[in-house]
Amino acid sequence: FFGLGLEAPKEKAPVRTKGKGKGRPTLDSAQIEVQRQESDSRSVFARDIPFDANRDQIAEFMMQFGAVERVRIFEAEGRSLGRCCVVFALRRSVEVALAGSGQQWMGRCIAILPYQRGAKGKGGGKG
Image 1 (cartoon, rainbow, N blue to C red):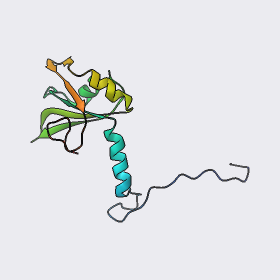
Image 2: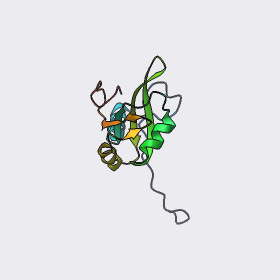
Image 3: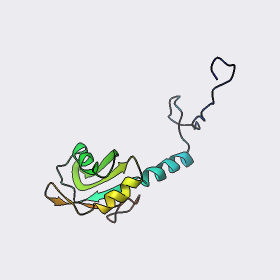
Image 4: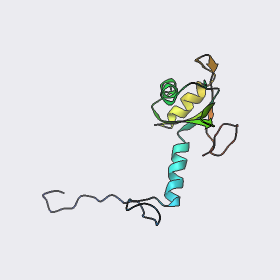
């Protein structure tokens, strides 16, 4: 390694594709799909969320099931629809969250369902 005349192992760089990358590495469609599938496997869909709950409040509620990476609130015309997608840091948090479905929070009974990309009203949201 360093100082011994050996090279450090090189990391594989992302595949560059043509487009509006402005010189930054971009991922090809296959890599993007793999990332989506991996993220989806760590995601749940929640409904009956209080309309005035923000991302931080939802993340705080969901943290009882595991570390939260991202929250996406579904909106129409700038207003919450009372549904969201939560991405956990670990897959095992999904099972814990699903088992916790039906808990009361802010006066609402929160339904937590498996996330299914593209499903409409049946446990998933638009991707």
